[in-house]
Image (cartoon, rainbow, N blue to C red; front, side, top):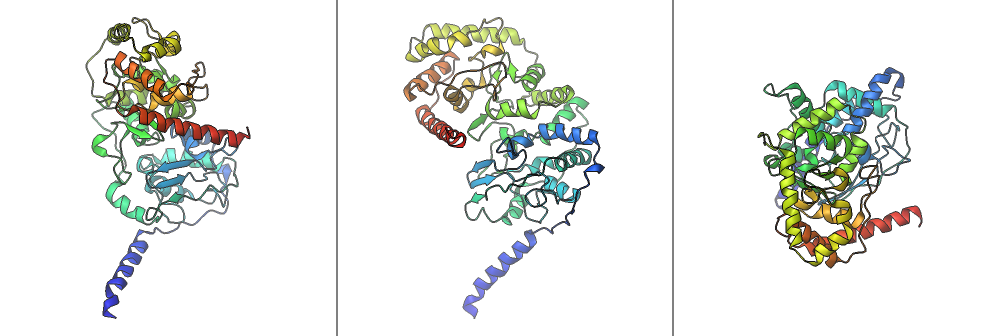
Length: 436
């Protein structure tokens, strides 16, 4: 018997951890009385759900809004978004207000199981009671959809939910954010939205080996879902730093004269998520975001951009490479700008973060996929150039780097091949879904 004691002790220890990690289930409501929610409360919840970009993450098919099924590849396997419609079995229709609040603030489901932090409860803990009540009202008055998303496909031991208890002990601070008395009302409102519903750092901050945000590198930029979320701190890769006015223009319209067009994941945030947000909230977000770079010195943006564009044009004249020939043939007609007056519709590439970032992913994806009205600005489109060879794409991208006065990207050919394969798979999946 003595030889089995270490095994028995291990079993007891694991069982104890499981019991300690499991939270109690909360009593469900058999029927949610939709009549108790006011129209103003529901509409406020609709706006908040947009700021939180809930629809993008929880809607895999347009005919099943909020029914889940969106896949999230991670280093630990694939997660699938849950059904958050008020369906009593498949969704959250049986969740009480208390259960909803606990999930949002503590990352614990109504049945007591721990939620994976891909659901950003680490940010939603900062949402006020009034805003959570509005979100609860909004989701409980959506169409109840009978749909079961796919099961998560996580590798062992990450598929053991109780281990999230340990993750929380290491990386989750349950204390909510508090306003900074040394900052103004607009800054604090922007910080509340960014740190709460907007969960902006979830995409713009690199993560450690356990998937937690690196707090000492907040907003330093990160690769998410094969889009690069650029740095927003003082290391931001744009030659003309963002100020509150250009950030407002970008967050409101998806366009910036000095920085380009919001596409990919950011395009969804702007055109789907922030679409209904009031102007004062967009202004507040812009004020807070502009403060992240720490650049408080006034800059003559027009003069600075004119200097940079002129220098880029002069470099291009002496390049005489295959990349320059491709740029002249495929890009210059649309992207040429006057140094004194760059236009968002022309996306000046010598200033654009897709070119100036340390990571080439965004530029390569846009070159391969183009920009459609559904992902970029409704008034702008750009064709994809997937017909170009990998060699041509590398030559073009490296020319744009040299034109901007930056060193060439390393291992670019390998990254082009990786992203081309992902593009091919996405096209094949779309064709299969549409029956083409």
